[in-house]
Length: 345
Image 1 (spheres, rainbow, N blue to C red):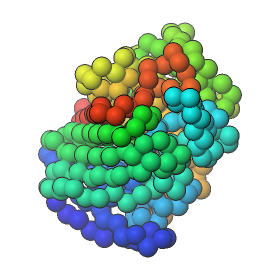
Image 2 (image 1 turned 90 degrees about the vertical axis):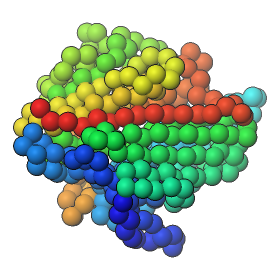
Image 3 (image 1 turned 30 degrees about the vertical axis):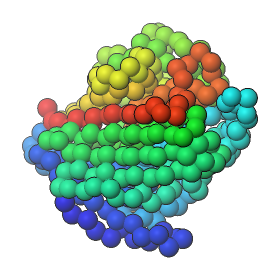
Image 4 (image 1 turned 180 degrees about the vertical axis):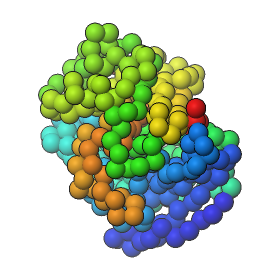
């Protein structure tokens, strides 16, 4: 394991970058935001390249304009309509950081904006912890959180754990951006994507779920067979999404890790499989990247140059009675397991 200085945040917090190594796979993670900084994977000819978008130093991640590159999202991933919810008769008001809505856990105390504690580290494994006190970003209950990153051969396993002393919503995910070509200025149109979901959750014109669960059949969202992204993106250019930014229903989230999605890049032969125990996965095609975010080595990230597959519970579940609950009870243990399996064909 290699640990290096990753810089100091604007408010003076020191951060580090850890390199985890497996069989041909190297993954860099920082304790700021429990964030995946880099993923180096070989192509079909054995040539390794970084296939994850990220920053060279912590400054880029601490910038409020950072589009959640590789971060751990929490307490609640995705959107909460109206930045509010009611639990046990009490109304909780959250940061309205996405228009009038709440996105990805909030602002200054969201999980991607804090320095996590290092609990354990080795050549291929990093365990980070964080305590989110009662009232943090408006959420009830003190939440104890643990994030484990482990490289096993050609697989990156990400596991999140949480416990709370009061009822509170929890729905964590990782927001890694991938471009399997290993070139962050090349559009992902040639990537072939398969999402093993028959249903999705439609949204209104502000990307808040309507509460409906609909079939993907007959829509541009039908990715049940490998589909070239460039053939579908033109069908999804209308606001508000401007591409894929949809929650696909995987099942009931009963705890079994199973294949959720598969992506291939024909030029390099690189492949990515996402296996998870979560009830849904948000597929996002980098629609809001516009070149204003400058990443590693001073490279700006244009639109549609990366994709995200974010396993999670349903968005806005706290306000949608027909969606599976994301409320964590005192004495319960929240666990989220996702395996990113990298290959080449």
